[in-house]
Length: 225
Image 1 (cartoon, rainbow, N blue to C red):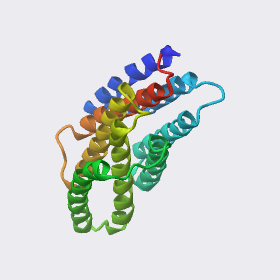
Image 2 (cartoon, rainbow, N blue to C red):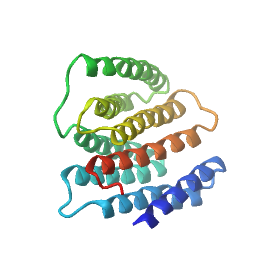
Image 3 (cartoon, rainbow, N blue to C red):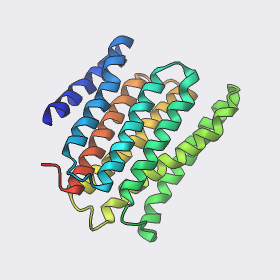
Image 4 (cartoon, rainbow, N blue to C red):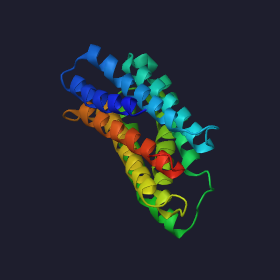
């Protein structure tokens, strides 16, 4: 139902505004509302019986929703949010590799700059966590960063897959890059140095990532009309 897509598209900028003006009540309404509406819209487009890729992706969206909620709570729930998003990424990775892994020079070429960027980011984050005495966060953050990198790599590899032609692949690739950007901004802002309007840029790139990934899967399944 297009109504839920429109609602999600309305709630997303409302959440960005709430973050800019530090309106927690509005954020509590808008932030989970985006993924709720987007998930309903996505789910209503799935045919019966539900395609395997669609069902797994929808599960990933629901894990993302749980992660959104945990990260709005106090810092004690950060690991729960990280775990929820970890499960979300594992679902997304599964969807973008259902037809099998492609491991050749082309995909390794795509992996190399991603791995380098994530290594540099992790080096700075780990140093900041050691300085602040939060060394217990280093292992889960490292694991999450590796899985996040694999999500981005998996979406970029769709550009090389014959079954992910055209619009579906480009939406997937853009969504994967934006998800990596969003979580990198969040980690830098939270653990290394505050970024001016950091939460705004984090949420802006995060919501665009979720929208584009959802569009890509529906286009891949031929259900985007």
